[in-house]
Length: 468
Image (cartoon, rainbow, N blue to C red; front, side, top):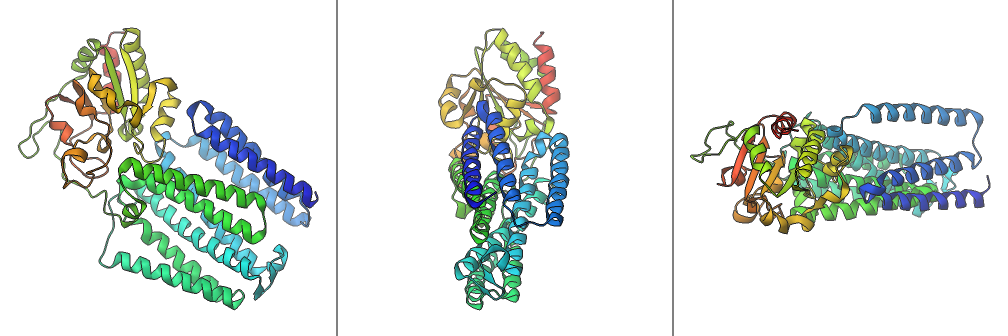
């Protein structure tokens, strides 16, 4: 395949990637978006493979690599639980970062193969692109591993901080920039390349360990952006148009998503990187007062009776629903209520769950109608007209302290104003605080009834009590 055909194939792949992103922006078109992305990637890989200049031996190695990687991906996709999607995404981001590091090392080792010069005499622009791709890729790799470990509970979700942490991070960042300048001036020193990689790997760890669990949705989208920019930088180094365009699309979309997530939490990227949001708080056991404050406890029968007599019910899902895999029981409950003439809607906070769109994916899996699912801005003014709000595992995003307590770590974060409803049914295992480690004032409101227990079991019991 000549250069013109290769470039055309890359252009077609790029258009398909854009269509994929457009399709993935809404649940109704997400499947088609995935198809566009798959077709685009097949075209991009095929064009690269057929471009020429590859020996039979290396061609077989690449085919073997694709077969092994594809098989692993297929098995993981089939076996992964929906609740584990955030850590799976973080793990995949780490692989993108590691790939960028390996490609940069290959370009440094054999620059003539990429047409960017000879050893120790590599083109200046290629050295800049290579070093930037290396640094961002290394940060993405270790940062994503730490995010994975926190999401998988291999590490505590609370921030890990120490004196002088931010100053150390800043010093390492400045040193990386200095080493990149020296690396470019040297024409491609392996020693400086290794030093940049080592410092960037360390910085990836240091940047993510101070970030608390409540900020994980932002971290996931931020690392997604990093992985894209790393790929794009390496694409410039090796002159691969598909890699440049794909990386830029992923990087820019991840940056936009990070902005949306931060806006949804009333925080800036700097606040997130600074960490400190997600400290564990004290929690009382179920059914007892916390600091003299009593809670109202109900049963599935109580909840069913209240819902039967409601005209409008709004469901607020959170990570607790995901852990319990309660989305199918929730949809069944909604279907029964609708059959009885009750208006049912679902309210989604931008950072509910542990990654962007986590709740939307789970509800879509349970075949909840898309036109019943609303984002915060669309539905917040409807809580005051709701007879019942059924909160199933969503803690921090419903906490009135975000509006009433200036001393609270979550103060200023936009929340779903469920406290305005006539009755709030709150499903939780215990009085434990949410991922932000902040006690939820909603538990103690006069219009709140706590339903203690497993979210799936409680919802199934409510379905039975509804008598259908």
